[in-house]
Amino acid sequence: MTVSAPTYKNHRYPIEIVARAVWLYFRFNLRLRDVEEMLLDRGILVSYETIRRWC
Image 1 (cartoon, one colour):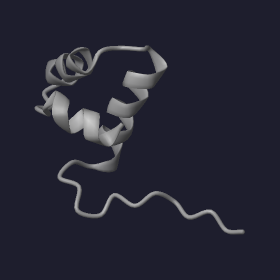
Image 2 (cartoon, helix red, strand yellow; image 1 turned 180 degrees about the horizontal axis):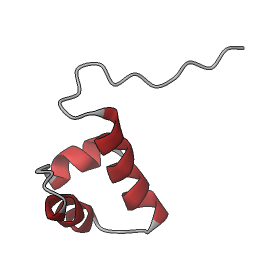
Image 3 (cartoon, rainbow, N blue to C red; image 1 turned 90 degrees about the vertical axis):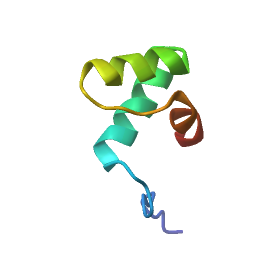
Image 4 (cartoon, helix red, strand yellow; image 1 turned 30 degrees about the horizontal axis):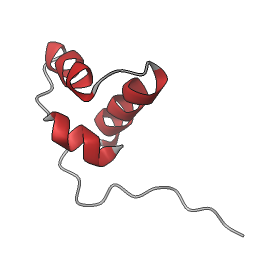
């Protein structure tokens, strides 16, 4: 059985940003709005609804 890597085709954001947002959400048990605010502090404008879809 082969395991394929997740595809990020048609995503608006780079893979690194998606991975960081998902990692923050699950690793530190944060609210979606907290993750949104943390990314905004780093200059990345992303909606909490988008983060919810990624997770």
